[in-house]
Length: 103
Image (tube, rainbow, N blue to C red):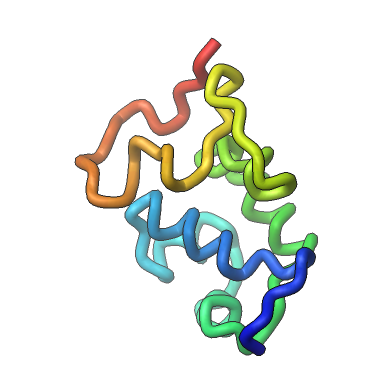
């Protein structure tokens, strides 16, 4: 499954996990899904749909990605960012303000 549909959030979930500096195990512990499930999403064996997105967005740490995850847009002034803008991940040092909302 190389082409992801607009309803397949697998790639975005991986981007969030990586941006937050989490292993797959740490991510599943926060979200409450199985390790095999996240592995299947990240290898595109299974499509990640709305149910899993809802579970991810119910974790306060990930709520800052809601707008980006659902619409591909960001609103930094409202605390809505993409993984590329995350102060917690990528190659940056960890920030203690991961739950801080701007505005």
